Image 1 (cartoon, rainbow, N blue to C red):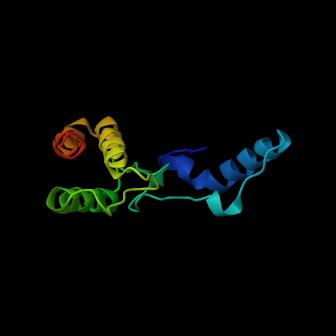
Image 2: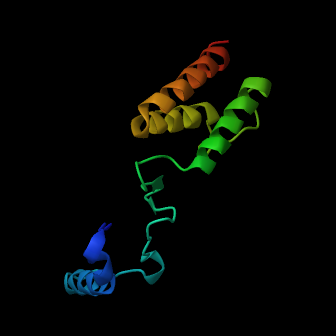
Length: 125
């Protein structure tokens, strides 16, 4: 569950958390204490792996690692490379490029073009 607020609502964060916890527990569920966070303005606000401060975006460090992986595959081929937990690095980079394109179509499309070139080169010959 993610809640967002601004202005006077931010002074009632503790009350919101207590009420949400009460309802969740009344319905038979539990709140994991390590997963309850209050992310204030001026700090990186990340929800389900996406940065949501001003606009939704993929974290910059993940994009840097991804571009580095693409470069290594372009330079040396897919052998011995990994992205995520998939044994098929080409399928994994294709999936991540599609994910980035879903979140940020402009940036994702350039990554998808690079991945398509890799797929053409390494899957068909």
